Length: 125
Image (cartoon, rainbow, N blue to C red; front, side, top):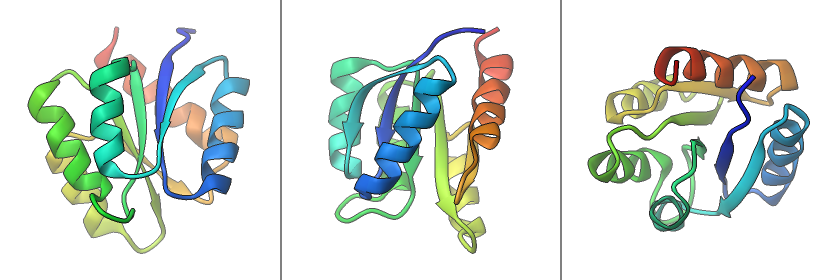
C-alpha cells in the first residue's frame, strides 16, 4: 500500500481529530489541516499533499468552491469530499468541480480506506 501525505479540511475539530486518527491508522500522514476552503487552497499550494479530504459545508468558502480553485491550479489534485447524508446534490457539484470521490459522515475506518484506495487505484497507478 502507498503511504500518502494528506490535507484534512473540515470546520469541525472533532471531525478533524477523528479523520486524522483513521488515516494515520491506515498508514498515511496528515501533513496539514485547514478549517475552511480559503485555508485549504492556501495549504494545498504550500504543502502539495498527495490527497485531500474536503468537507463540503464550511464557513466562508465552502468545499466545492475550494475544490474548483485547487483544480484550476493543480489539475492532478486528488480530492475526496466528506459529506453528510442529504447532501447528494452538493456531492455531484463537487464531482463536477473535480473531486475524485466522496465519503459520507459518520464515517467508519473501512469506508475511508475504501475511498482512498479507489482514488489511488484509479488515479495513481
